[in-house]
Image (cartoon, one colour):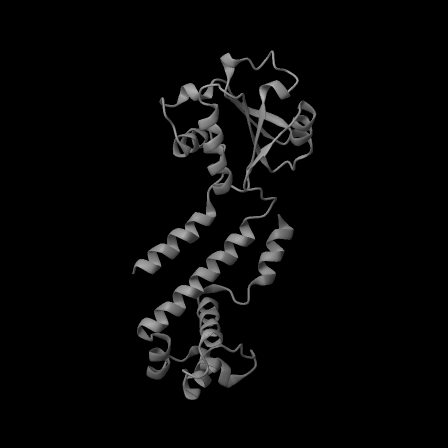
Length: 240
C-alpha cells in the first residue's frame, strides 16, 4: 500500500549504492570503540559518512574523487572490519524483515472451547490472516501427532493463526465423526478455502512437523518464513 511505501521510504537515510556505502561507514563509526579507534581515522570516517551540501564545491569534489589509500585501509580492516560488517548486514536484514512482517502475530495453537468461539474466530479475525483449524478428538489415530506438528508450525509461522477444537465441542459432532478425523479446515477473510478430512491418511504411519508443513505448502497455505533467511545468514556468517 502507499502508506507502507511512504513509511518505508521515510526510514531510509540514503538510496542507491553510494547511499548504502555511506550508511555502512556511519554504522561503523558509531559501533567502533572510541578508545581503540585512532582519532585521525575516526575523523576521516566521519567526513566520509557525513551528508554534504549540494552547493558545497569541496563536498562535490570529495564525493567524486577516488578513495585514498588511508580510507581504503580504514574500510577494509581484516577481521575486526568483517565482524562489524556482519553486524551491520544482520541489522539491515532484521530492519527489513520487521518492515515486511506487518499484521498480527500469534505463535501458538489456540484451543477453541465451543462452536460459538469457533465462529467468532473465523468471522472477526483480520482478512489478511490465514486460520488453520484442527478438528480432533482424543483417542483418534493421527490427532495427537497432528496437534504436536501444528504446535511446532505455529512457532515457525507466527503470522498464521493455528487453532484446534474437539469435535464434541463444535455443536456439530454428527458431522465430525471419527471416520473423518482428524480434519483440517483453512479459512481466510471469513471464507473456507481448504477442507481436508481424514488428513492423517495423507501421511505415513508415523508423521512429523516437516510432513505437515510440506503438505500445506503444496496447497500454498503457508507464507514464506522470512525470519529463517536472517537466521540462516547469521549461521553462515558465523561459520566463515
